[in-house]
Image 1: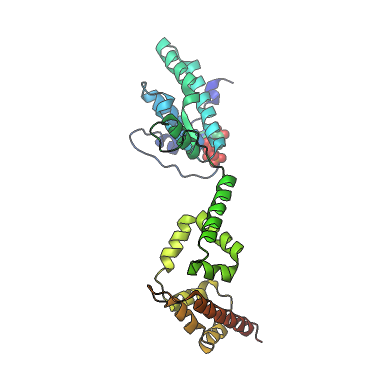
Image 2: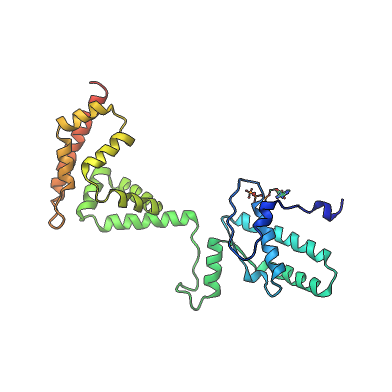
Length: 267
Ligand SMILES: Nc1ncnc2c1ncn2[C@@H]1O[C@H](COP(=O)(O)OP(=O)(O)OP(=O)(O)O)[C@@H](O)[C@H]1O
């Protein structure tokens, strides 16, 4: 079998993705040829632009494994071109590409940013000996920061209220979780910031509350839970109500919650 027999015949869609004059997004299932297409696109760019080298092409992947795989596939393609090349100029061109491939910018986003900051160490606004946090290190640091915040703000009314409600350690867990999922947390905050209690409760009925809706509604209206919620929500913006008062309201709510669960159990 010859190399030519081995060569992959790209599909029409893959060929379309090699177009050079615009950006292309390829969306396809696992194992359907995305890396193959990206490899071809990479080599086609080099082929069409003799002045470019691998250091002029930035390729970002999600994982280090994907970056290594792509570099290897490009290397194989370049070897094939080198082997098929008759002209000395062409041979030197692909030889140079091969030599520079190791210095190419095929990286994960973390590795790319790290390299950029190191290569621009003088201009970069980071200490020279900086390091990149791995996931575990980042999680530990986030928790430390949240713990420090909670401890440093124990006298804040909101912090005191939540710590009393959940316990300090669970509050740290919750805040760390929110910080970790920041875009979603901010979206939730945005969604609920100015919503009144009735709307919030309605959504709970529909999406969260597992209780029998009629029983729960009866509990809500009969036992003054709504009033308590309203009271909590209506705290004045400037002169805030004392933490103790709000805690008292929440304790009321807890009592009502117990009533509600009794209702749902038919007691
Ligand atoms: N047009 C084609 N004809 C024949 N085989 C192909 C073609 N395109 C890709 N392949 C082969 O299909 C297999 C999967 O291709 P590739 O690794 O590029 O897929 P992928 O979409 O990147 O996969 P993954 O989602 O796992 O990253 C490889 O063995 C590749 O050689």
